[in-house]
Amino acid sequence: MKKVFIPLMLVCIAFIGCDEELNVTLNAPYDVDATLESVIVTGTVEPIELTLPAVNTGDEALGDYSDKLDKLESATLTSLSVTITNPQGEDFSFMNTIEFFITGQGMTEQRVAGQTNIDQTSSTIVLDVEDVELVEVIKSGEFTGRAVFVNDELIEQDLDLNIKFQFDVEAAVID
Image 1 (cartoon, rainbow, N blue to C red):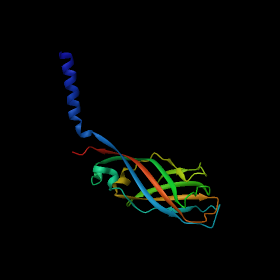
Image 2: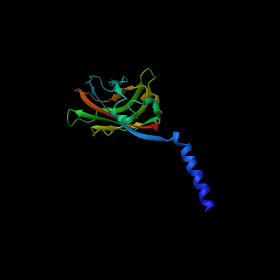
Image 3: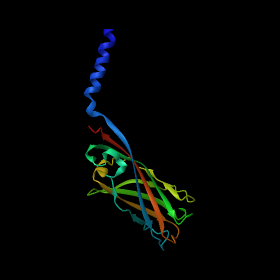
Image 4: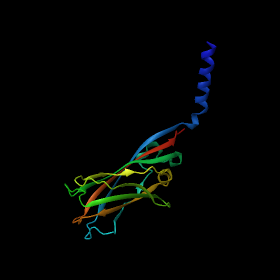
């Protein structure tokens, strides 16, 4: 009996003593709509840049942590996709590559994703994400994005895009 009781008690003490070290992982999705304006030039070395509106990181995407950004300990982008929402039936046949950058308030811009192997028959691009620590970006309260497109065809009309960000955010357990 003593052989079981002492190790069991040590395990219980270890869990109680480490209670403050417990973390929770949050799935934080953010959506942004933007318009890629039509362009006349094609196949040039000058890329087309699209700046996105600011995204508030302290919204409902973080649930109970929306107003407790100081509790966040780690954040990584797990997926990023760009979808043409208008005009219906449009695809990415005009595009060769895309790179995506984000920055938090008062921070330096970071490359977070890109794609060079684009399915030109699709209206959605899923980018390859970089393994970059972004907790300070999320903690800053908002982030902005910038996409750089290289096209090889004329973009005859404006394209409405929806950009979906998916973050895994690790946070200290709220007392």
